[in-house]
Length: 239
Image (cartoon, rainbow, N blue to C red; front, side, top):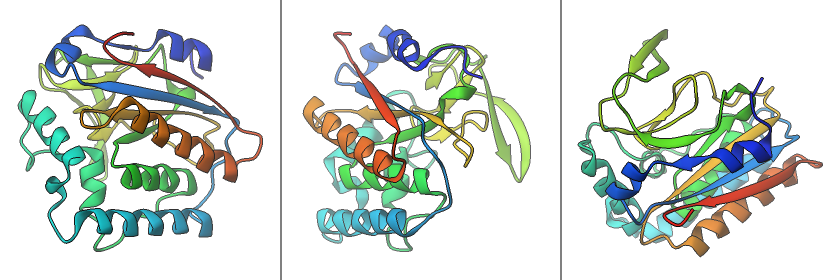
């Protein structure tokens, strides 16, 4: 079980000064939704993904994903800590690159937050808050933090590169390379009842645009899980 309750998780969440020194334009919206009910992909989540696919096709106008300023900003951010696009891409770029073949259908809640991510062109991570130990925080890795993942179907514990931007808790890394890949421990599954969503924003995405995406996410999740409730916190240079 989580070692912190939702309000405490948000209150103690933080962004390290070294991250803000790297990208002073960075801000994050943290959304905790409690009382959710997972389930398999369904008509509602499928329709949300289809709307997102149509929306980004209109934005792209047959151009490459990196032509969009919101995606280009994340390429620059990854380069700032030494990661080239062919090595790793932001989660939103990875999704946008899949629209021609269709966005993945994973489960209802993951589908919904992926749809909002693509529609609003913002990286979003969905985490099982009950698997957290301590608050979420964004830091530059020392290279010693553990990251549990799966490689070729087998569980594996690796480490981030020194200086890499990572989300973490007291046990280790929860997401490598800012929003590239989540760990296994905090992944959503159909038994998840309390979710931490992290929306990552860089210029040209404004605070208002980030909050609009967060409101759309809350609405989508609460519509399919009546009785769920949400709390939010905006993090940035002034928090």
